[in-house]
Every structure is written in C-alpha cells, then in structure tokens.
Length: 276
Image (tube, rainbow, N blue to C red; front, side, top):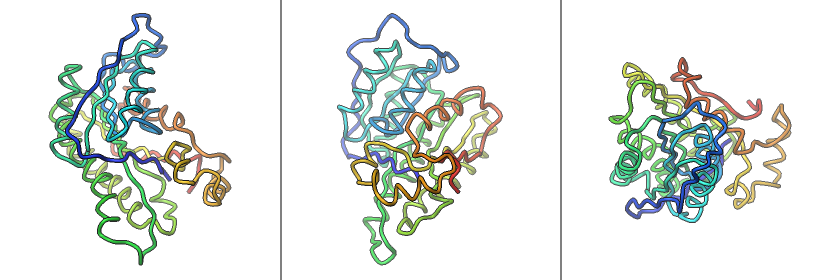
C-alpha cells in the first residue's frame, strides 16, 4: 500500500531555480538524456526519489510541491550537486489553474515535455461509519481529479515516445479495513490508466500505473505507521520480508519513463515485494 502523501496548498504556482548547476557531470546513466519530466508531489518520499532517479538517468526535472518549498529546494539542490538540472514549482494539482501553471513552467524552463509522473496523493483511513464529505473529497480531489487535471494540461505538449506514470497502490489488491475511500481513489487511478492508454496511444504516448506496497517515507514515519502492528503485519505478509524503500519504486519509474519500456502501456506494475 502506498502511504506517501503530498499535502496540497492553494497558492498560485511559483517556481524556484537551484542556486547553481554543477558543470562537472556526476550523472552515470543517460537513458533519459534530453528528456524533460514533471514529478508531482516530489518534495519528499517516493516523489523525491523518483525525481532524483529520473535526473540521474539524464532527464531535466520539474519538482512539484504543494507546501514544502524547503523539501523541494533540497531535492533540486541535490540533483544540481550531481550535475543534473531541476527546478521547483509550487502548485495545487487539484486546481486547474495550478495544474496548467505547472506545465507552463516546465515548458518555459526546459522547452518541452516528455515524462509526467502523477505522484501527488493524500491518504486517510476511516471506518464506514466515519466517512463524511470532507474525508471523501479531500482524497478524490488530489488523488483522482489532480491526476486528471495535470495530465490534461500536459497532454498537448507530449509527443511520440512520451511516458505518463500514474502512482497507484497495491491497496486495490489487499483492500485493508478502513481504506474504502483511499482504495477507491487508487482503483480509479488504475481505471484511468487503462482509459488514457487507449486515448493517447494513437499519438505514441504510453500510460502505465506503478502501484507500490507500503514504503518507508517521512509520511509513514509521521503517521505512526512505521513500527506499528500494521507495519509488522504487512512485512509478515510480504514474501520478500521487508518494507519497501523509495528507491525501490524510483528505479521502476525510471524504467517506465525510458525507451526500455517502449512496448508497455496500459499496464499496472505492482511493486510490493510480492504482497497480494
């Protein structure tokens, strides 16, 4: 189950450039050389790891954040320190204006767009009798509407060979109690992935879902999940016998973004150490 959450703010899009770009390239891979990527919710956790991984593979990266400018700047500076190019862009993905501003910033900064990783997400568990409108709309607005709005804004700028990666969750397979709304949002992500793979496929644009299991992040620590009975139970049910790490997910995202995955579209890749 992917518990990574990017909290969403309402401010207008603002972007910040790194202090400097190193001229001594530290990049060891180049399978994404010349590509430009947007990663939403990339100031921490899975999103930050994906942004870093794409940059290490040669892509220029737009690091989107909702409220943590400090976190986003840290990701940008870490990428720059290794010879990569990145820029932090603030924006609420559930706002059409902010979604459009995010994509516009990418085009203005780097000139084109090749990769979109829809990672922004929030989660909140509640039993059936505790579900209310706020609980429902908070998660659907970010996890589903946000994905659609950013993809809608990005699609006109994507061309042959472009890759869209939607971050889902294995929660749709393991369906834990109390996750009715969250699981529903991730089920919607899976369905949307299939639909958009058909809509955008004729233009040579690939759309896939990457569905992590439980991952150790700032969010899972802050939420008290790490070290809990729930976490222990998940690890006990995981064939590979451990909790996932952000880099476990990031390396798969880099693969999906590359031409190595050129024949994959409409797929749901479950990355949970074998948990079912």
